[in-house]
Length: 341
Image 1 (cartoon, rainbow, N blue to C red):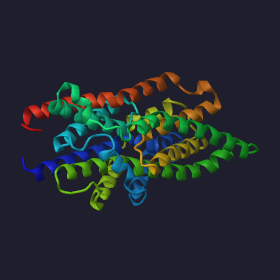
Image 2: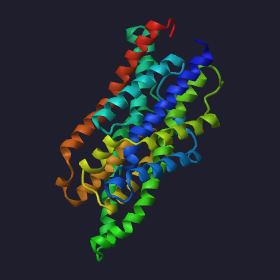
Image 3: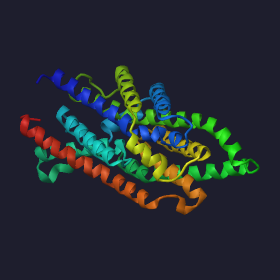
Image 4: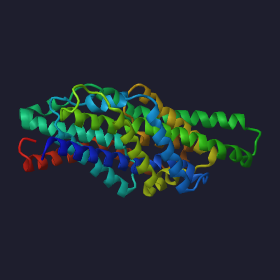
């Protein structure tokens, strides 16, 4: 297979992952606004997809650079490593989508990329040199935000709910919902914008990695066409929806009303935009799940289905090692089929 054909194939797979990311994480963007019946599912996915796409015009490409070269040794990376990494991320995303678990596509991608690099490093350096495929880079802060992003979302949502109930303490619930049904359109747009600004950049980083590893670019920078391709793919994926996860996020963690949906979406968006500004890939799933739990806890602790929340947390914990293992196995298969991969 020629270098050009291989690069084109892997870029196509990366954009498929981006599409699946939008499909898988559509629930994060629309679950609350659907659960509160402010928009129908079809209206909600169109609204989310639009703001996913226009995020292309903001925040630069710092997250893409982090994903592309902030976790692995680029000297180890080949196009086949990236293909195996994408395979690990896509397989894990599809497994968790089928189970209805809102896991992180971001961490699946990072885990898959790392697992494939470790597998190749073992071939290059032997069993004792597997970890030479990784660098310290952004691992500490990224792993820290696995904990921080849902916690930030949780605390902000709780504080916003407190402020809303204080400011509207003389209003009836019906009057509050009248205003917040309109405000939730803004908060849902903000969350979808935040989702697109962070998640599409991860695919940009992978596609740029393919171009760099294939020697089509001499330095690691994100071309303009990659930016637009990634945002178009994630927007189209969002339009396809992810109804299994919508049900989990929108109604099974806790019951939501428009005021709660507004607070959850606003808190989740802030919990995503902060690390995006810092150039860190963060899980939109973690952020919105923590925010929804914060809204539920404001009413009463028992309003949150903590048993389901525990299952979701375990899925979060397993995402990086599971996707890494699948990607490592995928690289072994590729290596057996392609000499010198």
